[in-house]
Amino acid sequence: MARSDSSSYFRRSSLFWMMVVTASLSFYTWTVFWPQDVPYSSLGPLGALAKHFVDYHYPVMYYGWFLAWIIHLFEALFALKVCSDKGIDSSSARLLWFAQTFLFGFASLGLLIRYKPDGRPKRQ
Image (cartoon, rainbow, N blue to C red; front, side, top):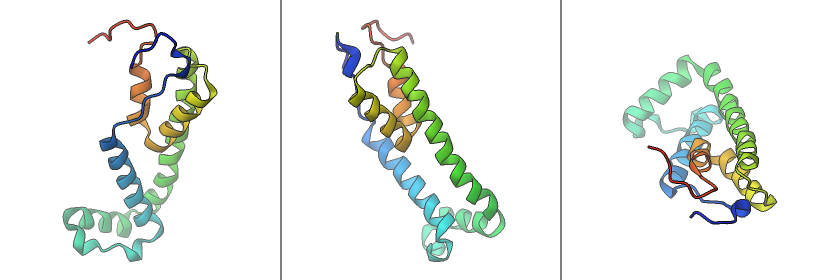
């Protein structure tokens, strides 16, 4: 999707990664805030692991949930810096990169980091 005008460059993350991140963070939120409602026995090994963490490491899970969102916020702020460095000046494109990176983390940021605005091929 290389364009000669990189000021409005935006590319959506892979649907696979969007679904993985959404499902993971949703399950994590569920186990942190409503652990009594999770059907652990129906989830196999994942349920057993989640139950163990809820029973024995709940404070780590609770603070880890906030830490995960803080990390996503810093990734999104870094995406804004990368947009500036790569000459993406369109406020709508920058907002899309910020929002997508905040929600999906490195699945989005990786696309932005790999983007070469001058059309040069990527180094392997």
